Length: 88
Image 1 (cartoon, one colour):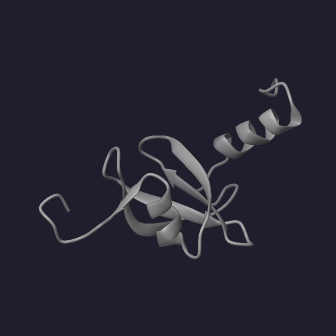
Image 2 (image 1 turned 30 degrees about the vertical axis):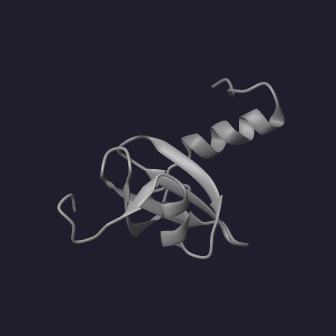
Image 3 (image 1 turned 90 degrees about the horizontal axis):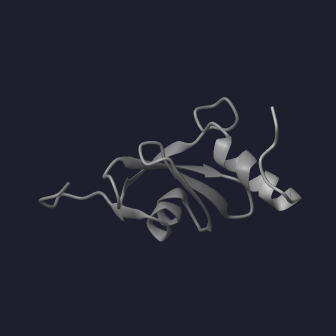
């Protein structure tokens, strides 16, 4: 298999994006925050030193963000807090 990307950083980004958050490569956890694009619940993985990977499995999106907790990480990226409103 040929590695994608021209630079070491490119390869690192492709490796992160292709990693599986279901426990194969890392284990992401539910956040209670829904995706602002599709409405599915976002998951987050703590990478140490307040760095999180936030992902939506439905939209196939991932983001890196510095935050105090998984909920804040999801909200700072592409999430909306789940609540008791009409669109919940």
